[in-house]
Length: 329
Image 1 (cartoon, rainbow, N blue to C red):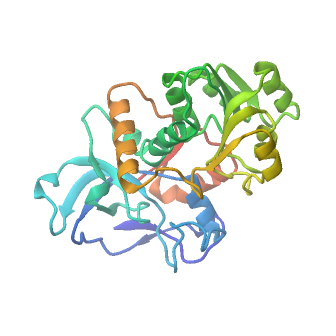
Image 2 (cartoon, helix red, strand yellow):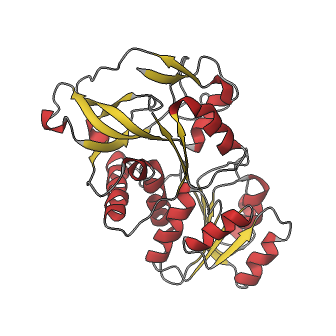
Image 3 (cartoon, rainbow, N blue to C red):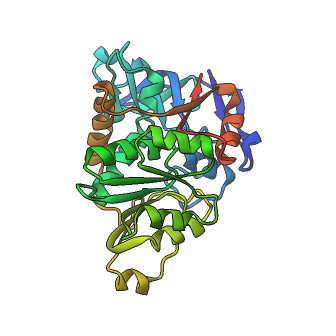
């Protein structure tokens, strides 16, 4: 089969298409003929080698085939797996890697059968991102009356969070994004206010929209943007860190946090809140069910052929993408 293989850490050009042996399902596993593979932003960082020893999906040794989120048809099953799954269209996550390929191995515990009404591209856009979005809303305790500031609001997670936060009862949704095209999408997905964070006065624009301060910040960018967002919180607010696409995680002064009675939680830990395997599977199923029922709509921004994985990574890291980026084997 064909797969993307990384043989040394570096730029997107290290994502090379190669012929590799077909995978075999072990006990408790299935092999899926991949119809769509979702790219996670963290995979672009792992590819550089910068997350070695930091991220659980960073390979201990090369070569490495990236990819966790896949959707397709079950081709074979391993020992202990119901053979009735063969031929079923499913979505799920690999154990750690291997999704940028024509076939991938998944633990059966991570496999979710799909309704006919939900396409593979849509489904794969709701795995890690859907679970994360639901987890963020739950971790932040978003509810009636909240004023929520969402960073990277035109991204795959951000557009889902906007929908979920509104459904949870948030009073005002403020979305940050860069450029008019992304701001338009942020409004379409439910933000009351869309602000370009590349403008120097963006914090003042947030203050005009929320004079008493925001009650929740969902921090995807980190760095100076995250620090500025923290200053916009009202006393007693919640600051949830779930990314650092700027390249550095937000650094907060513990004294300032305590003085304003701010609750700070890192979604990826520590502390992480309740995010055990059972919770993550439940959140994933909820996201897929909500999409099947038309209550949640993933933003699929762009698709690339498997062979163009390097171009896909380049687009993501240069921030020219919106929503979810998907590979099509």
